[in-house]
Image (cartoon, helix red, strand yellow):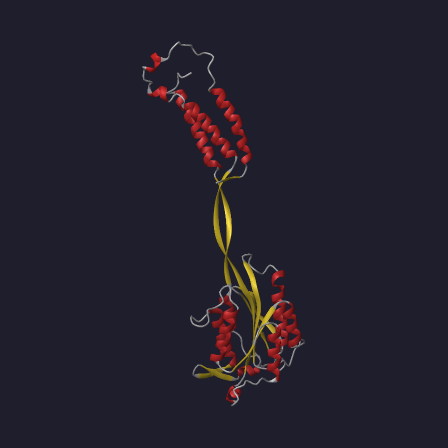
Length: 339
C-alpha cells in the first residue's frame, strides 16, 4: 500500500495531543489514603470497557486522516508488446510469370506457385513456414508499373484474399518488368511508417524488409534497381531478392550456379542492403528460400509492465463513519451514565 498525500499524517500530531489532554488527571477526582479497599472489589464488564467509546472516536479520527492521505494499492499488469517486422512483399505479374514451373508432381504457372508460397509464408503451413502473425505486411504487384495491392496491415486474412485475386498483366502497354520502381515504392512506404499514425501504439518495428520475387530483368520504369536499393540502404531496409528461372542451369557439370546479367544486378541490389539473392526453379526450392527468410526475420514479443492504482480511501471513510456511529451508540446506551 502507498499513500498519494502522506503530508496529511501530520494531523496525527494534533490527534496525539488531544489524546494526552483527554487522559489528564481529572480536577474532580477524590483523594484517598489507600486504594486497598477498591482492589478487593471486582470491576464489572461495563467498567472494564468504559474506555471503548473514547477509543472508537479516536480510531474514527485516525481512519479519517488515513483516508485523506489517499491510500492506494498497486496492481501490476503485464501487457504484451510486439517487436515485429514491417515487410513489403513485391510480386512480379508480367506476362513471363505465366510460364510453368514444377509444383509438387505437376506443372503450374509461376504466378500460381508464387501466390501459393506467399499465402503459406503469411499464414503458415504447419511445417517449415510458421507464419507471420505479428508482422505488418504489405503487397505490391508490378509489371511495367508498380501497384499497391495491399498497404501495410495486420489484417493478414484480407491480405491473403487479395493475393488470390492477382492475375497476370499481359496488356501490351502495361507488360514489362519495373522492379526498380517497385523497390523504390516499397522502400518509401516502409520509410514513412514511423512518421504516420499507421502502427498500433503497442507495436514496435524491429526490422524493415523487402522481399522481391521476379523472373526477369528490369526493363521499364523510372528508377534503376541500384538507385532504389541505395534508398533502401540509407533507410535501413534489407532487400531479399528471388529470381524464378527455368531449370537448365541445374544441369551444368561444374555444379556452379551461373547468373545472368539481370540476376547479377539483383544480387548486388540485395547484398548492398544486407539481404541476399537466391535463384530458384521450382516450388520446393522457392519454399526453402521463404523459410530461410522466415527464420532470419523473426518477430519478438516483449512484456511491458503497466501499473494501475486502486484507490482505497473510501474503505477507510466507511470504517471511520462506522466507528464514530458505534461510539455514539455506546455512549447513548450501555455507557450512557459514564462521565
